[in-house]
Image (cartoon, rainbow, N blue to C red; front, side, top):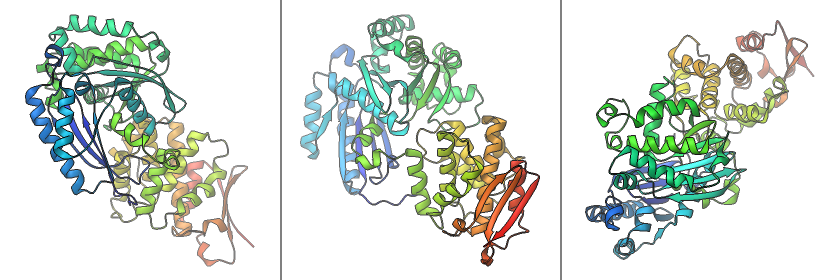
Length: 494
């Protein structure tokens, strides 16, 4: 869904040990919405552990790829282009020569991140989407593994280790016993890892995203969105240990996993298994946001960094797609009396629902509920748990009178308990009534009042305004049914 831009886009070229990626983001957004994303596998770090130098074939390819990405960025008129190099370039004896070739060849500046800077950027990427993240961020690349603690919107202890999948494969000769010993030796040297006990472990990196797909398949999870897919650590270990013991031929049969990832999957699974045992989290959370998004977040103006990432993107979508964007905040206030005891988290999700409740008005009426549901499930919300994403989608589905007897509804029903489903139905029915009452236009709702009173559902409207002549509309009845209110009171006042 297109979001209006007020600033020029910003670009990031990430020169990693295995791949090089260009991401161009909307420069006006709190959330890093990718306008363009391209990756090339150059394997710069291949053989680095033995030779101490970058892979010669990879160097030639990488220089050409970076040249293409610089040219594309300039054609897109990016406001700023950050070129970041990580473990392979940082550790190689000829890393400076590689950087010089790029800088002189394309008149750009390359920033080679230290291990600490790379760890902090990965943590910032997770915090960009989940400001309340609490636990340990683990970022696995081709050349290194970074671990960093996150809490209260900031990072703390951090460490970088030469345990990237390419480097570990070379160091162990692809011998799993030897690889396990190397991993154990590095992890045992980090005294603060047990700070992760009972908290979350946030897994970042392409190899671990491939493992997330396997976990989704193995658990028959109804939602295939990778970001913020989470499961209990015990369940995660069961699946990860299975992956680490599989042959590459067996892994080729797993649907949805890139064949380019398969060669490194057993080692990636082994590393994740060892990190889980070392940090002892209660749950594993897969994040699609890492170093690149952290760099984006670091450069945001403070006024944007302070915004709630979920509400920010919902508000931007409403601004571009709703008939009357300001109506979302009115909806939030208007139905508030129905939810006197809601938590801050519940209020945040309800607010998100109100903001996006009218962005699908131009969909075909016969398919509006279904289209709204499916599109919300796949929208670029940051750091939203799958149950919360499903709840928002289910609310809007009911706002458009969707039936529970459909495959779409069942996707949400599998993820939500009955109490949450009931709350979603109430919010969706209230949204339906509000849009019917006001026609979606701003300011009208302020003249009415909706509240519950001793088992009654009461709607008070101004008697002298004909816009509120809706006594026979079924929206009021549906809301009463959702609230389990036997008595409805439609009262004209004034």
